Length: 179
Image (cartoon, rainbow, N blue to C red; front, side):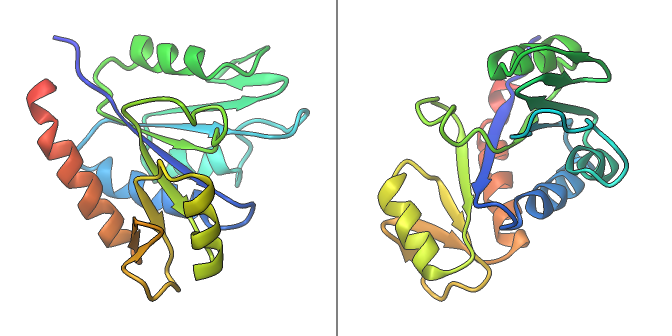
């Protein structure tokens, strides 16, 4: 039986806390689910999966498969050329068919038209959240620890990691019949 893989995308500005949120989500869900992580690395020439890097940290948090994609490399314990998200998804499905949850950091514009993906934007202020809600109304949630509003631009605001994991749990539980 082929398992369904839920995709959760985390986007936000540089240094907004995307990787910290990804680490928390992976740490929480890897105890019960098979979790993978895909990271968009924006700069060519970056050493992939070095100690302390984002991919290393999320691997340590419990992701069983970690993929890093940069303009000049693809990390899956081996570098190849190309920045191809579809290839990364196929690789995870082929190498880790029991994967139930893939956390994706970045790829905001590349995945804008992709369906069946839960999108979380990490905002650092109400103004940031309002701006992104206008620009990207297809967001599923806004994660903002300092926001006071329950909803911004019609998009639900989650203020803690536990709220994020509760929402993802509900989505996973409602889709279990496809696993």
